[in-house]
Every structure is written in structure tokens, then in C-alpha cells.
Image (cartoon, rainbow, N blue to C red):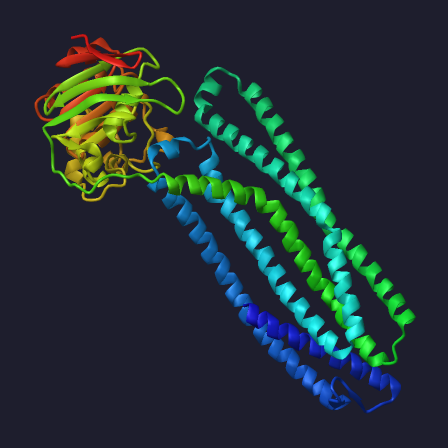
Length: 534
């Protein structure tokens, strides 16, 4: 594309010189003129040559435009795909560090901003190439005038530096306000039920409006400095033409045709110089987003999800050996924990909020690694087991159920291939949900709606359990699985747990007596330590 632009600009410069000198020759009553290095043209041959140059230039620019459009599509796809893959390939600690709403900005808004920046930078690149080509041709025609033009371009570029610095500062402020606003919007979406139930919509709107107004003000300030570049540049550019004419008059020149050609090239070069200024302003505007994007992507790529290569089909014993874990500089969330779970065990976990139950679950799931100690599976360190192999053997039911925007069957399968309709029916039955599903008009093909709004809280929780059971895991980890269920649904889940006894290892975090009564033993997690209470 640069080559096409360079050749097209050279052709344009020669075209302008031919047209200008042809007009001046006709005005002077001459039939011919000399362009450069005693190269003579008749007016007729000059016009024909100019027409040919114009046609070739058009073809070259068409080729550049085609490359240009394809480049942006490729750039957008690669940026978004790479960000998505880096996020999904990163470790859970790296993912959990993401601010609320930041992932959406990284994948959706920032790549679009960068593609827009690329558009401006490529325009600046092509403008710079064209500017150089024009100056080269101008120098060959009239060196003195060309040097004056070059000096003016340099002065214009340096004169706009303070404005570009202001654009960069304002852009950083605007990006920070955008991230705060995105986090608030995401928060309100998550809390929409509570906001309506507590009738605080007006208060929520007031807080949101304040952030919207603040973000709009920073955008306006950034836009003012960004848009200031164009009028300042054009004013300085037109003033520079007048200065150049004065300088040329004082220095004197005897070749009116050459000077006229160079001045016309100078006028055209100012447009290309404007493209350079727009590119510099765009870079200043998007630079803060580039910095954030680079920092987040570097953090993700530097913290990949690392697991071993050992493949296993099942296991009999899961052991935690003197395991400790702490978050950054905080006191240990778990301290010297030892625990053994055999195949078929049904183990209940209790403890106050903040005692380390969630950390223990994350360690067992392989989402975090112990700071001290080891976790073994049939004497094999869990870090040696391949992630896909461990995922087939371990299933997790979180306390807060989140569903895909699809059918009931889609949510049971949860993006996993090789799960048949009969597997889905079996899992629904095991979770005590098949009777409910049969009452729906489309059975398991019934859409659950956005965020599972078509299902009750208990139905969503049992659907999450069905999702976990469909893979026939060796270890099932449940975090308060019956906390949002009515007594009838709770009894169905407890019965499911009883049926699993002796078949798979089950760890269930719960505070409901009915659930804990079904467990073989109950362990207490308190202040980071584990003890058996029953």
C-alpha cells in the first residue's frame, strides 16, 4: 500500500507541475515549456501525459484502498480473537483480577478504537509518503522554494505538539471515566432484581447519571483539544503560504513557471501534512487505551493456566498435604490444611463467611495452586494432571447459578461435545428437574431466556446440578446447592446426593441441616484451619 501511495504521489506531483506550467504557457502565448533538466513539453503533449498520469494514479489508489479495507478487517478479527483467547487461556487468578466491565471494553471497544487509530496512522503514513514525494519533485523543479516549504512543514508540526500533549492527557482521563462507567453499568445489570425489589431505581439512576455526565465532560474536553488541531493547522498553513510568498519576493526568482508549480505543489502538500497531524492526534487520543490494553494483555499472557500432561480416567483418593494459601500480602486464607477424600465419600463443609471455604474449593478444582504444601490425586500431584483430563473428572456447582442464553439442553451440555439427548435426560432426572422440564411446551429444547429469567431460582439451581452430573464426574463439588431451593426441591437434591454416595466423591459446602445430615462426615473451616466436627 505504501508503494502504491508513493508512486501515486509522485505521479500527482508531476501531474500538478505539468498542468500548472501548461496553464502558464497558454497564458503567456507559448506552445511549449521546460519542466526540469531541459525536458521540454508542448502544451498538447503535456495535457496527454497528465491525463495518462491521472489514470495510472487512480488505478494505484484503487489498489491501495483494497489493501486498506482488508487490513482493518484482519486487524479487528485478530485483536478480538487474541484478547479472547488470552483471557480464556489465562489462570483463574489472572482472570479474577479483571475489573468489572473491563473485559467487555477490552474485547469490544478498545479493538475498535485501535482499528480507528490504525486508519488514521495509515492515512498519516500515506500522507507522509505523498508529502515526501511532492517535496522531492518540488526540489527538482525549484530547490529554494522546496526548502522553504519543508521548513514550514517542520514548524507546523512542532507548533502543534502542546495540543497533542493535551489530547493525550484528556484521553487518559476519558478512558478512566469510561472504565468507571462500564463497571457501574455492569453492576446495575447484575443487581437489577435487587434494585427493583428495594425500589431504589431513582437513586441508582442518579448515581448512573452523575457518572454519565462526568464521562461526557471528559469526552468533551478531549474532543475540544482534538478538534482544535485542524483549525490551528489550517490557519498556520494558510499564513505560511503568505510568508512563503513574501520570502520568495525578497529573495527574488526569475522562473515564474517553476515557482508557480512549486507553490501549487505546496498547497497540495499542506493537505498531506494535515493527514500527518490527524494521525499524531489520533495516536495521542488512543495512547491511554493502548497502554491499558498492553498491560492487561501482558498480565494475561504472563499468567497462563499451567497444568501437566498426565491423563487419568478416574481416581480413588484426593489428598491435601499441609496446604496453605494466601492472597498477596494478606494473612493466609488457609493454613496447614490436611484433608483426604475417598471415592464414594460424601463430605460436608461448613464455616463462617470468610473462613476459607471458597479458597478450599478453588484449590480442589485446580483453579489456584497452594502457596505451601501439595494436592495429590492417587499420589500424583494435581499439577501433573492435564487440565482437560481433570475437567472431565471434576464438576462444580456454584452458589450463584449463571446460565447460557439457550435451551435447557444447551445449558446441561454447557459447550461440551459428545453429550447425547439421553445423557441430558439422565442428568435432569438425577437433579430432580425432569418432571419440571416435561411440563414445558418444548421440553429440554425450551429456551431459558436471558440470564435464565424463564426459570425459577430452584429450577436454575437444579439445572446447574444437572450440568455438573451429565459428565458423570469422579468428584462433585457443590457450593450451597440447596440455599435457594424450597423444601421439596431440597429433598430431591439431598436424595440425589445420597444416590451418589459410594459412586463419586462429593464435597458440598452447605449450612442446611438436611444437606449436612446426608453427609458421611462434616468438616469445619474456621480462620483458615480445618477440623472434623462429625
